[in-house]
Image (cartoon, rainbow, N blue to C red):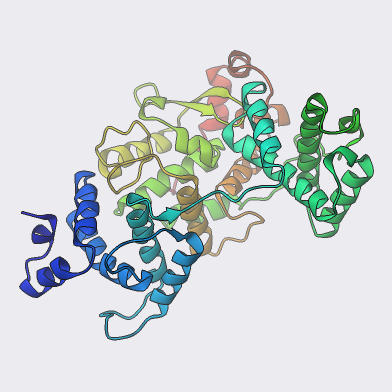
Length: 417
């Protein structure tokens, strides 16, 4: 029995699928998806959409390579189409569903051109990124941020016809002043200046720029451990938690993620990197590998958080071989992506009308710091709790014994669960 015969029992539907263009290509794709444990309803939706996707892309006897822009254009056209070939009125998710299935379909047959846009001085940027990784051991996410800062400046000098060898401190100051005039915040300017300084130091060693340029990069003074409230109030955090329906697996997962971010100040990357073995339910200990600064911390878990995490593992998390604590709900089960975590948390902010400078996962980290400050914790305690201290793993954890850490972590979450 072919996958089409398994999916479509009605004779007319089966005839439509077997006589539509690109039968063998569609059969191979759907069979592959079935082997990767895609559910019946998912495969049925894919098979139905593939007919519309091929029609909107102009595929008949053979496929061709498309760019992302061509695919987006076809997706937008389908989202607005209301003709006789469409049985349902276009909905808010029409474009997203079309794009998700079409990307998988085209990637499977290697017909999607996803070439990375070439940056200015691409080879030099790659050399810089390699040094950041091999010499300084920076995390991939940190390297991406550094590269983004440097790439912006390199595009600026290219636009102004300034050769890299001719770059001066004056050019750097003009660039940063221009960004400040556009509304860049002080922390962004400071981080960009720091990234440029590191790049110029590397470029001096390579002979790309004048000697000493790195010493002339402007610096910006930012108060150390300045906990400015950029997140929601704790009352708003309570409202977001209370709005979750623990009968829905996806919201049980959201509940667990939100608590870890708000109570323990975990970043989205820390949550994604958690494995099942990082949570000791018997001893109520959470082990966190801070991805940003390669620090390992162990936190005592309060009872309410343990209860929520247990509920997620026992009733919501799919049974799979994936070691990640938080996984997708659709096979093949994989660790969550940063975009998924951001979207889920941001939707909670919007759903509850929460007003905050930031409205994503990092806002909950700010809420954690703000709450600890209001509870009378000193800055050094909070900095260590959030993993800010620039020390090695053992020293970071040795600064506080379990009793001191439990005082911070074991406040009541009464009424939230």
